[in-house]
Image (cartoon, rainbow, N blue to C red; front, top):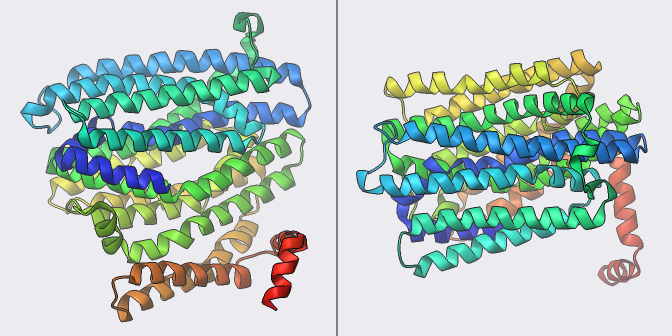
Length: 496
């Protein structure tokens, strides 16, 4: 996360606000590809985890082979759609300086290549998550971050069109990630060693996978479409500098969501395996735990960052584009809202009935675009679109709760008692602490103190009022394990 944020600063300085805004407008979908990748990987991971719960290796091999073929087709279709759409985007539609149109068209083609390799890597990523192999996922993530840093450093002294160079290196990073995932899975997991995919193609399974992945893709594209649709609307109304501010806000929220998304990636296989083993009670309990701790892991850092955003951006970027502060603050509030039901999304995936869910929730998220269009056309400020995004996200949360009650008999009362009500005190404690620090402390190092104090207050609130009995038992057991190590015992003895 630290490397990625530093690389963003270098890239913004190397490209300038206008070119950085162009990149986030034309190829900004790349910033959403990690979300798209994870959402689509859920399809493969769900079926692999489900059959792992049943100890059926033959079906795991068949699931992987069919998924590989399916995502190859999806990758080709998405590239074709993007290239056809590209024929119409640049002719008096997007608000791009005339002298940069040629570069914008070029990076658009490289974006299409990035999309293909990202989508084709999905089955391998899903296999790693199904096997709960977070170590190799972490290795690949670190390699990606280092490659992006190398790109940023190279851009600072590169000759030629830096915008095109950045697009080329972005695609090369996607190719490198695909190779790392594919080679490792082929060597490590027997279900991934497929010599003849055609011999394992199962029409019934392919139909089920296609339906499942197709509706997941629809939901993912609704979310990506909302974000990129807002980028286009902002561009048409205010130009590319606003796209730079919006792109930075997506970068900030995406990086701060890293901890909760990593936690969810670890919990997801257990949610799917529990459903595969016909243990729905455990599946629902895990989904609630994931929702609560996903929110906590986001709120611990997001709340103090919201209060200190101006100082953080000034330190991070040096030159801060207009409206970046308010965009970043609202973007963090939006993603905190999403975390309220993040585990319930996994539960719905585990049950497997995703069609109605994706139609309702996806359509709700897309409502952001027509409402934002009306607001911008009637003279509202550019950040008004983020308030609409927060509102539609909260409505989507309500739909997730109701749908999981219908699909899996989840108790709404239990969700409110064990999740939402437990989040109130830690959240208020963090907000009150951050507000006090920013109101009464005047010092150049205040942001560090605010983050530390607010995070401490939030964690204290979690330990005192945010945990259920079984969660307290798990944490107590974990602390006891840590203290049982000889070095920890010696340290505790020394401190005492």
